[in-house]
Length: 235
Image 1 (tube, rainbow, N blue to C red):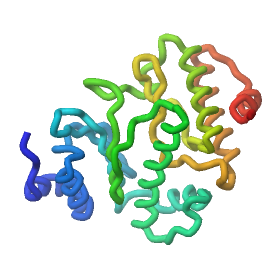
Image 2: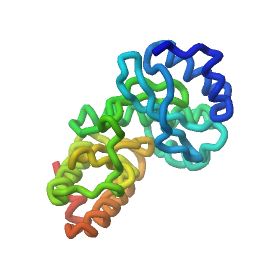
Image 3: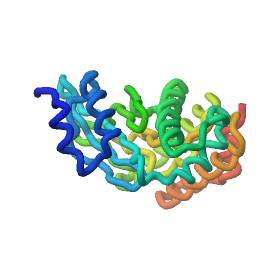
């Protein structure tokens, strides 16, 4: 498959701004992917596409939208993160930091032993990572309930504890941000993740626990949220 020229990337001009087009072209020129393929999600905050590489591997390209991202919401989250306390309060700086933060959080979760997509690179408002599932992307948990709910649930709680022991809280964990990959959980969307050195991490962990417990209760698994908090944070 021939690599797209800069002119050909302009065919996406009705979807992306010029700045994003230049970044996509640069990442393509460096060999991270050949071209975008199917959209997985088109949202107000981010567009997510599959893309194909030179060796026909499918990857995920997540592109934060510079003009329509909820800058104030991002700022509210990121200012609690001790890694970004000195960030400049400009729209682009916040969005770029948000993208970098997701990349760093995925790496940190991966180091903790949690199953996550392998992150390949980020550039400003673009993140390239492994596609989970083949040939099609693995579905969200909300769309594909596990055949063995108890085992899936226990692995999810184990992952939350592993992340905590590695100093990381997901911050937005739910059936929307867990993939079901052949009855195995895979955590995604770490943009709201924060470290346990950040202000208010306990509230975010309790919210994650509430979301997980409420979902699995529908599958017949009852759990006490206070007990789960103790189980996850006990050292």
